[in-house]
Image (cartoon, rainbow, N blue to C red):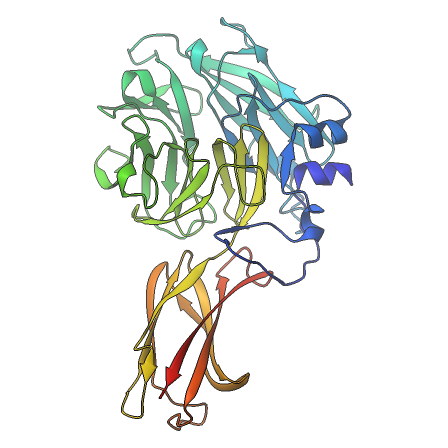
Amino acid sequence: MKKIIVFIFIFCIFTTLIFANPSTLIHPPFRHNMGFNKANSAIAKMVLGKKISFHRTSGIIALKLLSEDDPDSRNDDAILTIFGLNNHQLVYNVSTKQVKTFGKKGKGDETNILFYPQDVAADKYGNVYISDTYNFRILKLRYDSLSDSLIFISQFGEYGNDSFEVNLPSMMDLDSDGNLYISDSGNNRIMVLDSILKPLKILKNIPNPGGIAIIDKKKKWCSIREKAFIVVVSESRKLLKLTLRGEIIAEQFAHNVTGFENVSFNAIDYDYHGNVWVTDKLNSVIHKFDKNLKYIISFGGEGFSKNQFYKPAGISIFRKFGQVFIVEETGFQYYWIGVDGWIESITPSTVNDSTPAITISLYTTEQCRVSIRITKDNKEIRKLTKYLRRTIGMNHIIWDLKDNDGNDIVEKGEYKIEIILEALYSSRGFFEKKVEAFFEKI
């Protein structure tokens, strides 16, 4: 039971829940995680029986290893392996059995030391890569399922700026071919290495690159059919979406993020629909953008309560189920992708016998299905939509002011518009968001 509390990985029998604001990200049902959505040092100590201190957390990757998957069963599909960097070590779980670590703090070229590592990347075959930032190198390890341990394979780089050198390598991601994209921050470039850490290409003139995510149509559980990458640049003030040749597709600036005087973009990942999620340590929030980097919403705020973060660093999304793992300075948190929304306006808000229709302007933060019911005095007048699929952003839905029998409404008074939102995957069936508004017939 205690191990389940730490990892929060096992799917159980769920019950439908209705959550209050905000719900862009939601906590899984109690029976899924025993009510523990955050793992901090106190919980880790309680479960593991020894002192665990979360400090200098950075990169994280959550995935399903082939060696940990039973192909004849779906019961273990959501039991993931998580690799996360904490206090100059790589921390990882062995299924739900135990937590193990690799490395210790050290400066030099020994294969078991790390000095301010920034990110970790891994694939389903158990290949694990660490950007050992202040040792100016990339380490390649392999997860050995027989010994449940990480084995050193090779390393790449030393300080410099030629094709076999790096300067402060930071964030990384893998494409479907096993090629590793590295933000070589001090050299203002992206380096691409193959699976044996041989240089393939260098994309130059990318100012101070940081968080990076490869969008790859060959990757599983991704609905967008393109191959590109998104990267944080310009001292965490800008997002770029680029072709794999380095051509700009889209860009987003920090000053376009609503409601914040200053924004510091950090780590990146994307979900099944291609929506981009970015951590912001300065404001302790997660920013969400669509696949074209159009701003959608920000979630969180600094603190230690529900739906709050303290300097979130890394983020990893397991796209199959919409599971979201976020590391922060005090530990890590676990969410599902939900949906939030609100009725921006009802036009007109007052109608009479000559009004032909009203327009419901509904803003949603996730691709979702929308069910709308019109009532008066708790009696249903019209079931306007059921499971109508809508996209992110402003959606305009028209009601012709007729009842379920096709007759014009004639009774004067106040009418209520009840809207139920459900995400198209992950939390669908387990979560719904209810919003409502009123208009008057005179």
